Amino acid sequence: MKNNLIRGLFLSLIAVSSYTSLVQAQDEEGAGRSAEQAGRLSEAFNHYLAALRNVSAGSEADQRLREKIIAVVEGLKPAPGIPEEARRHFIKGDTLARDAHSPAEMTPAIEEYKQALLLAPWWASAYHDLGFVDEAAGLFDNARRDLQLFLLTKPTDAEARAAQDEIYKVEAKQQVAAKRAADEAAKAQRQAAEAALRAQQQAADAALRAQQKAAADAERLANMFVGRWYDGNDSEYLVQVTRTSGTYYVNPPSSSFTPHNENYSHARVSTAGTHYVSDVRVDGQRIGFTMHTEIQTSINDRQLTERLEDRYDLIISEDGRKLSGTKMIRGCVFCGTKAETNPSSSFQVEIYRRD
Image 1 (cartoon, rainbow, N blue to C red):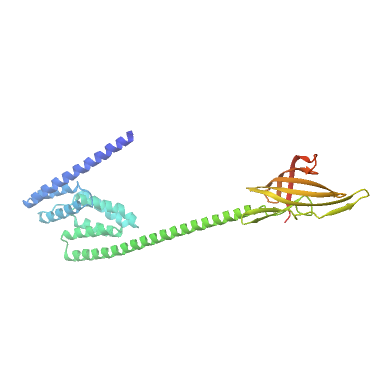
Image 2: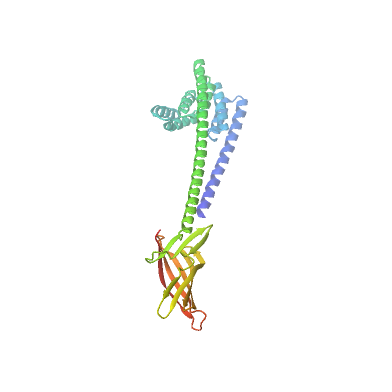
């Protein structure tokens, strides 16, 4: 909070200082205009100089005051001399400009010329040379303004002709630079649009790949139980799992046992049976189902029935080749008699896929 307060005070001081300078510049310019109208050119000159030092460089007021100063100097006899400090900045600017090898290296030279022209804003040679340095730095608006101020200093006809021709060259270079900037902006805009389109296409492709992978993974997971599952080394599979329209089906090899008949000395025995699967349950990597078996046994024409339910609750392995879990057996033997019900029993079981 303290830093914000200090910053606020600092900005307030800057605002007050700027306002004070503006008021002083307006007062000095007004006094200079009055003196000029009264023919007191030396007094007008001093007021305009004071006003120039209180305005922003490159502003409309800066341009206007320089034009007034140049016009007033034309009427002063003798003309004011060039201050030594202004000449020092001018020579430094000339030296730095000659040693510069790129537009960016022109900046120190430009600052020196500006300092010279702040001290001697009527100096024709400084405007002329600054115009060429600004042109070399690519500051075409500034170059044109500098050369136009140079023309106001009433150079010789040859100098004026050369300066005006240079202004035309600056305008042509400015057109080329503007077109180049427009082309580069259009190119950058086009590249940005193409990059955005590529990014959008890449995002769409990535989304499609992710969607396809998710669908493939879902399909793989959905079909991970499909196949024939064997109990140990049995040659015949225990169950076959299929999937149609999103529904799982679990079926034994056949729905009935092959009838079997045996004749003994004291009895004739025949057996037959059926089996089927119900209550198929799938939840993630877990599958469950109930195998129903009914065996009909005939002993000397006496019918006996055995009914069994094998309830499987299994989880698939990581490689998808094994189902392991529990099998709960319950049922009855000689169903229909008084001693018919067997207690339930549960144990661990593993079944394997071979295909």
